[in-house]
Length: 276
Ligand code: ATR
Image 1 (cartoon, rainbow, N blue to C red):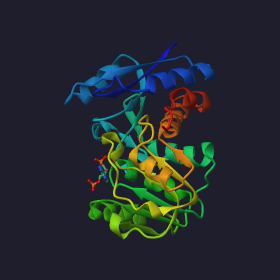
Image 2: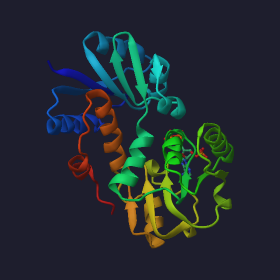
Image 3: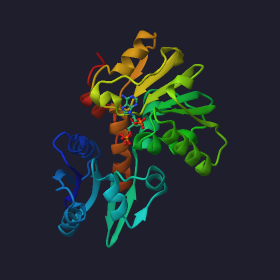
């Protein structure tokens, strides 16, 4: 019997999840149907209840429902707890298991697909919102030499640094700074702000990029964002946007639901928007 899954959001037209999961199902031979669900605002729980009642097995969750899903879940995995948000749910009887795979997807893309091990590296992450929060533990698990969180509103970066210190088992130094205080060079620089959605440039000194460094914008599909352009002009040749992260977080959900890991190469190739 065909198992049903869906992504819920509002708006939802833009979501690539059905395309990705349908491609994964084809290559792994899984019999699933994966649709798009427009969730009326304020009616998350009722919409998900109805989907479950009609036999739905799992869901991805996108804006603006990641916190609603957090509240709806009966079993929050550590990744979801740490991120403070849910992007994948699995339904088992009365239980709603909830996960957040954005951070692990990011790290898998960087380390596995792009070939940039993070161990012993100096890592800079711009932004202190949900994207950074979700990436924190997976990044720290890679044991970088240090992690610096930079944000316009320094207090938010400080909160995340404190959270990181409370939760990590290793001893990676995590520092919170304002942009004007950033010093030195970094091996990997992530843009986890929402600046690229509005074609804005975070006030980052171009001197932060070490030679051979990776500049990674977590935003997907915006081409050469102002952040990536800054990096390119500073001589960085390893530029990436969030297409691989998008595919890898989906792959993590797919493994969780179906027990088989799909290869992401073809999907990444298909969804890649040139960085120009
Ligand atoms: P998300 O969940 O996508 O991370 P968010 O929680 O609203 O979204 O956080 C957005 C992040 O992008 C914040 O860190 C924000 O900085 P402030 O906390 O100082 O507002 C950052 N941001 C948004 N636009 C930015 C810009 N033009 N330059 C630098 N940082 C920006």
